[in-house]
Length: 272
Image: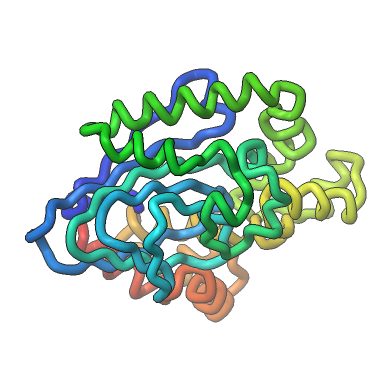
């Protein structure tokens, strides 16, 4: 979700101490009686999140969720979000590789999952916290309370609450800088690490393999090109994003995003 004015979408930045962990906070709000139903797609970028829902139940990939708090694990494909009635939700988005500090479990166990704090025995996300958040009238007030809790957690778990370890940071930055197009074997050489060691790091801290994470970065780059370059042929965009032919581009893009590159660009133009 990037710009959704019909849902009152707002994005907020974390405080300096939480910037190594939190990419952003976000809010969507729409009073009851407005447009009856909205369908949006949350595209994967390798991160994880927490969603507090104070409105009508959400439907994620066809499943209704009534819980006030959901942990959203990493995903390899876009998530279909269906909203109706009164909408009032606040989310935390963790950077790829950083969410495990707060979610504790190896992130491979959360892949494609939408879980409650009780499922993971997360005392950080108590029922009392959700109730207090629901009573606060504005997103900044809610975020202030969340940041207090997150910082208290980091202080209490100082020995284990380090942002992504240096090797993991290096690998994530390398893949992002290459826009998902770099050869993993070159990364292994630069890091002087084995394939097995790198795979283990990614499964624990990102929830997927380096190859899968690279695919998300590559399709994410392609999405940006499709949104901003409305004249270039799709074949040229596919090559620029690292796909070796148009069939490969269409197949991989559709597998991750759910629609073809042409359909995605048409939707982006309609929204603009």
